[in-house]
Length: 80
Image (cartoon, rainbow, N blue to C red; front, side, top):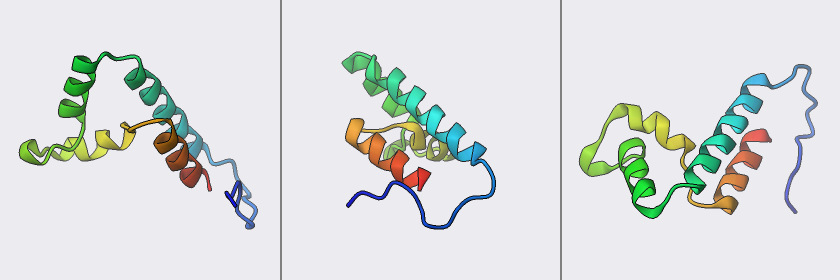
C-alpha cells in the first residue's frame, strides 16, 4: 500500500534529494530536543506566521515538521 520506489529507473544518483532528506532529518532532530518555550521561539522565527510574514520563512518553514509521522511521510514522498 505504501510506495517505496518509482517504476521508472533513475540513471543518476539523486544527490540533491538525499541532501534535502538529511537536512530535514537533522533539523527535525534539533527541533525534537528543544523545550516548549524554545520550540515556540523556533517556530515563530523560522516558521510561516501570517501576522509576521517574511519571505525567508517560506524557505525555512520547509524544514519544520510537526511529528515523526509528518516528517517520515514528507521524506518518503520526496524520495519517490
